[in-house]
Image (cartoon, rainbow, N blue to C red; front, top):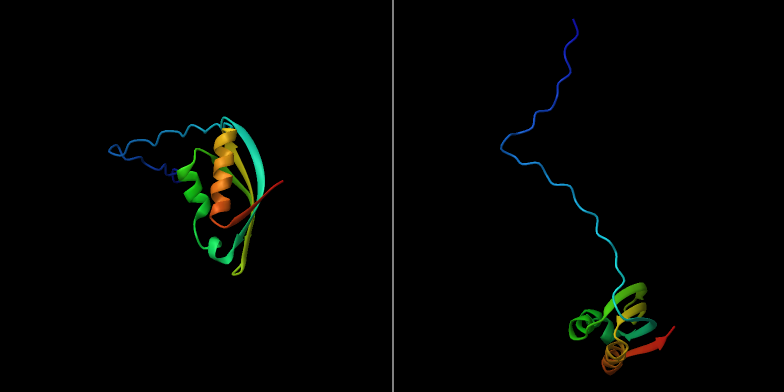
Length: 102
């Protein structure tokens, strides 16, 4: 006689985990613009992109980045109202970041 296969028992006190609903990616409203950002060593130590995103209603997408002790270079896409994006770019420039459109 063969032994029966054991079936794992579920605990009656533990509820089943609900299935996750996949998130749909939606493109933020507004215009998208891509830029090369060049940070000095001092500016590269500050969380400028985070500060910008808190101050302005823009969505950022870091496309590429390289940071060394002396320099930071980043390709970024900013999406939002055109006037707000321009204001965010001007703020970055006032904070020591060289901004060049791609």
